[in-house]
Image (tube, rainbow, N blue to C red; front, side, top):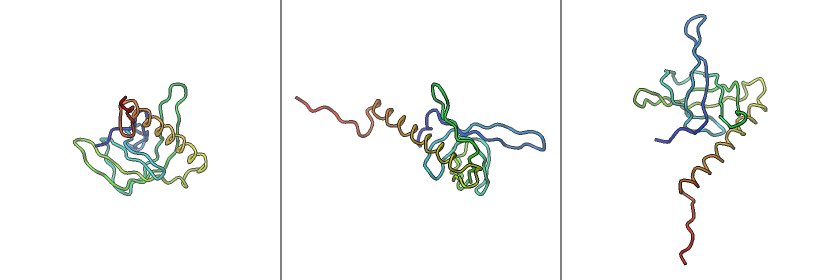
Length: 132
């Protein structure tokens, strides 16, 4: 199983009755231009729409993509949690160009962080110095 993307969470609200809402934070395990994979103990069904915010924690100012409409396309159970494949529908946003830009910025930062982590841990792509 892949690890969660560091410093990136998805936030969304779930209605409980007429007046009560719960704020849920879910770990993000995969992210590309089409969608993401979330892990949470909340139950959703394929076909459900999740209005979510992606938040990348940064030292000075967090990067946010607010109001992302996500369509749940797949659910997989893992222990007491579920992994959800969520497809983004950027066109449903009031400002699709801005949202696409925010998502691209988050993907760029995620890529840079993963590259740095890989180099630090001696992961794939690390070159060893030639023996003398």
